[in-house]
Length: 227
Image 1 (cartoon, helix red, strand yellow):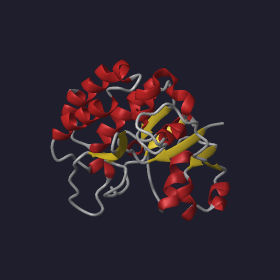
Image 2 (cartoon, one colour):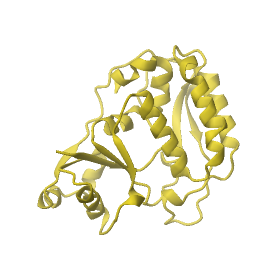
Image 3 (cartoon, rainbow, N blue to C red):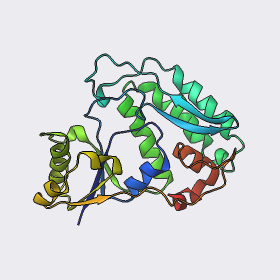
Image 4 (cartoon, rainbow, N blue to C red):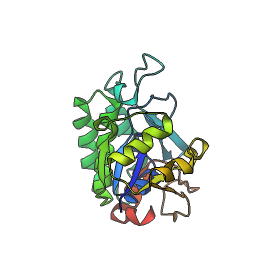
């Protein structure tokens, strides 16, 4: 039995994203699809004393059909800016000091060598999985053969990975036909976000829908218990 999930990469995603990764055997970063502006690909939210705040990586979009894995940053100034925003808003979080040096090195050193949004997002996915002790295999869709329409491409990925089941987000119900998956002997499952326990969070009221860094900086090694 092998379960697969396929999602586009996001910038420092929320905890539900890592719930999906933790729930499968192989997770596919699906960045060979169109980059969508004003979406989660290059931005996310954190909590501050004044409410939620977006932090956004500046990118070029040269054409409408530009793929995520073709999308480049406009400059590296975001690195220091984002790190300073995180320090300002999470310095008093219980576990911030435990991870501060690691994330500072990523923001101020590692990211300096990266121009592609997909590569930047992958850095954070990998380091956060390590912190959360998630050992799921993670691969990029550009290592696979993709063909067919929107749904058939997903099925083709699962077949190449010898998947017996596919875990999908609820938004895909608008275009997924369960009978197509049954015809290819792939069981279709749906992730149910929700019922996540609340944790000690700075700046009430509590909000689940922020970057997973909020959970990590507040709960540290216990973070995995909250996804």
